[in-house]
Image (cartoon, rainbow over all chains, first blue to last red; front, top):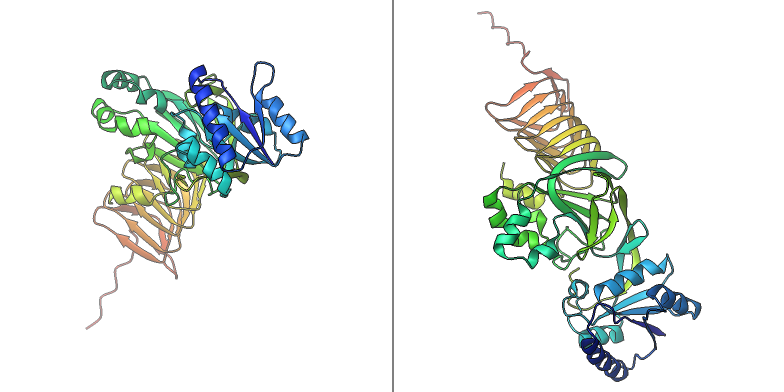
Length: 280
Length: 128
């Protein structure tokens, strides 16, 4: 049985209602109707996951924005579900990762039940399948003009101390970086950000000169840091951010944790319904 | 060393401003441009760039050195010391290639008895 968590948050009312109607039509057409739990001010995603668990539901589908999926992941607390995602937001980066470019594709994919086991990353109490950033934020950079992005990248460097796999400590002066499980630009053939390899990829961008900022701005905005000369690339199972205290770690532009904190990978922990056009 | 080729092949890359303290273990190729103090271990290839400073023992499948290494090297395959390499430590490897200008102080073992670098005795002249 499917349990749909329908989340209107971060969507304007008219868009949500239109997409809701489209979704209900498609669920009926593909014969995958189930119970729909709508997120309200009185019923959080956490409450809906509890309800689904009590009813013995095996498949949870998040319908909403990337936040809906991320909050649903956080609410699982280790419980065993097969997960799916139906994006109601055109700017969703998770939909690109999972190969679900529209509501129609997402519903069709869920009906086909193409399930992949993928790695799950955990940062404090927050589970995620994508990536977290520190220092520079690629998604914000993407929306800036050329001049403003040059200014945004021409900032003092951060001195960061990181411990890797309880084995060694790194000290680095950098602009920022990311810890990636997967991302919208990864692919199965690439070793970076492959969510089935059992590793996290730590990418750290060093301070760049003005010429290099201009040359590599687009790559930074795409999150393809490993293609920039001088970038450190570390494959690991555990990353502990020790210094500087208070520096934020962001997911989709929102701060989810502050240093000191740690991120670990749980290999092939998650069963996820994915599309043909997924990036891994 | 062909930097582009190194970028493509390396699974772990230590950038120029990185300082590592501890045991750097990897299952793939490692490229080091920064500083490492501790140990470096992989079954694959280690590439040490010109700006790198390593104060560590290196245990690897093969290695190409262009920077400074203070420590012992145990390489099961090929070891290449490029012209800018400075090695202070003992070397154990299967095949060794030393380019003009490379500096090496220590003992070298290649599947047999060790030979001290810079202290090789000249062969005695044959009596007529």
